[in-house]
Image 1: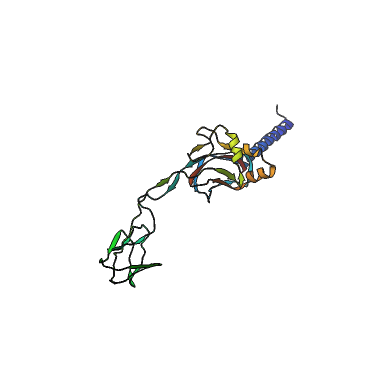
Image 2 (image 1 turned 60 degrees about the horizontal axis):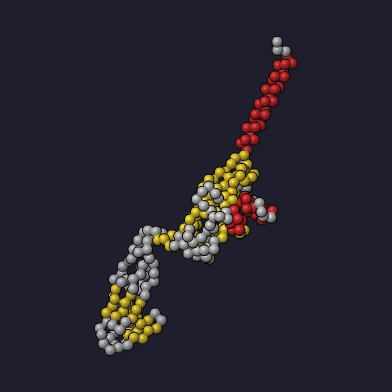
Length: 262
């Protein structure tokens, strides 16, 4: 038989259970996880400008579970075909002809003075033939004076097309180094994989094509607290890969951390 006191006790227990369940549900919803697995970022660099990447860490960070990456080094790529090219025009004065070499610049006007008579037009592969006779050429800055036989030359305006495509240049860099927030991570990463090659001009995937990655959390364990804090604190983390020549670098990011859900 249920008494009044037992009914009150059961009701109180039910209220307590529901309160605890509600608290647990709210707690679970407050924390979430960011998990970036193998996200790639590609940049190019040379001896004066490192390949620069940025990784965003939420200000609601609670703790890291993973902070690693691979690096892929490749040759330098330019989004223009080799047979397009861009180069300046050259003017050559010969005893019997005036020649202008090809150019792929955008249409422009080039002026050449022949005995104070201007020759204008867009440069192209062509030549101007002068009537052979005894005379001399006096060359000064941007002006070619022809004594005897004054005359004009006309050119037909036209354009040169640049062919779409990809031009690929071999890796021209060695002595690679990796920085995070200006801190040199190179010696720490090299120690992690003493039997694997470091980034080099042969290119490839580093440290290797297996599941191994350069581990930032392992590296910072050997750093002073102030340096470690600079790398791990929330914000827009700057990662730089330096080399002493041209190269293309791809950062393959593996990042996982817990954060407060607002």
